[in-house]
Image 1 (cartoon, rainbow, N blue to C red):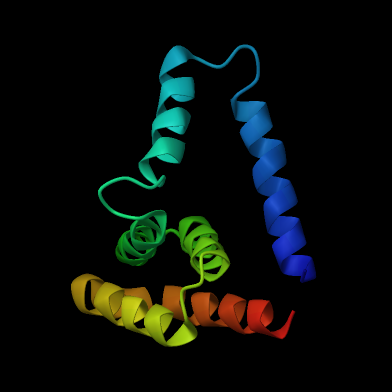
Image 2 (cartoon, rainbow, N blue to C red):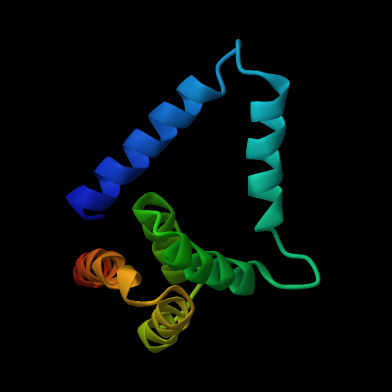
Length: 115
């Protein structure tokens, strides 16, 4: 596991635990639960949902979300060729402002493929 991946996961887990501490609001708890359950297998398999999440995250320009979905896509067996096409969809829908986020996504993809 790359240092970047380890750091990303540790930070995400630590901060999610902080957000969902005992004094978390019901709204926050429900939103986090909904987010988790949304990406489970259903009429669409989890793999497809993660690919959709990656494309949407590119359009919304959320680097943390992009990183999360790149990681999950790889874990679920999405090929690099497919991820490149997902990046294309995000680029077409989001326009050139997506390019800086694609750079960071490719950097992460390269790091994960090296690990």
